[in-house]
Length: 312
Length: 249
Image (cartoon, rainbow over all chains, first blue to last red; front, side, top):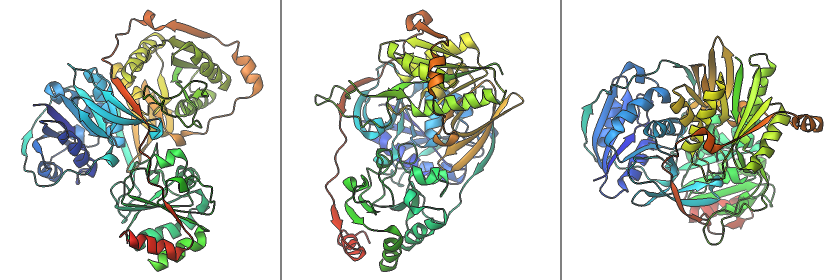
């Protein structure tokens, strides 16, 4: 029975939904026996949330002051120790997991399977390369643990009907003091989280300014959507980096994605290809976004978007 | 600090739309334009700016790959790097192989800072910097959008899902560059001429005695599933109707 260790992502209060997605991927492996490791200062709600995830058999709670902030250099040696007998070690393919898991893989002496889209069989997965222009089937070698990150847009969240046992564990690995957390600047917003929202409205460079993004927010708020942006809009300083959707930003899979004033560079399309329905509004009828849009409207966004907001 | 070591990967150019071969054996790379991985170019620009501020004395660029990777190293020298090292290997290398090779060069050169891109746009792995930091037993600061050096430490602002995180790491450390760290300079013709005279050492990979990693085996390449062809609507009213029809609003 393959033992799978999933590393939980959380902010101290809430388990990040990417954890439930990584668990769903783990559960796709035949005969999976899943442990979830939660690193925190004092366990609490995040441990309880992890214990409720479907198909998890144990939650390993690692409680220590050093685990207050998710620093890869601090967490990796502890995970490598917990993973000593694991066949698979999975983390989410979020900035948390992308930072952490390769460090774990190197300590375990293996390569990592990044951005797992599907489980194809024993140690075999698919994953995207070249900004999603090719999908490769990858087989990890026998006799070594498999370390992977799970592409969150490819997986549903595991359910919440579990009741896993919780065990406190204390790895003995020596922890470095060379890395110190200073601060997190977070754009607090009442809007749905971009990565988990079922509807997302995104704006591009054609918005022209930070002020003009207000029409994007107004539409998003009318339909209860999260708000995203193209790289061009982020680079131009219209919106903060955490709103970027695409190859190097967030990869999302909402039921409805509305792209406004976004031309549709391949790097952006990579971030939305799993969206249920893509709507594009753009003045330029030649814009590549229309090649992937399910519903396209060639129009001036400054008149069309307020009109759409009003009519919805 | 004396030296900064920068990784430059030779990769298919950013503007090329890569296609999968019909037989699923790989992607078409014959005759395709190759460039420095754009994130590595940003890493190099940052190293050059640190040297220009007087906070380092030498910038060394390293590439691991075929002999043709000399082209990318020459471009790096033309941008302003002082010297270049090519670890020559024609084999398919995984990220852990690259990290181990990188580490062998780190042991020879003992840099105060290693800079490289957060990911290569060919395999999109996003692993090598983190693995190097692990093997080296040193700090890592990935996805950097701001980097400041002071008193033997680096203060790095990182682009994370929740916003911007700042961490402080003791040097030497590995920093991986994100898009907004800087905008790389353009190379001028006289710099290209000058770069031809700068030293470029080639080291056969076997000379480093690095143990090969347990390789991931890629068994098949496929194009992505195409999306269904969509419809065009003429007015906002029609758009609203179409959304209603699909039950989306």
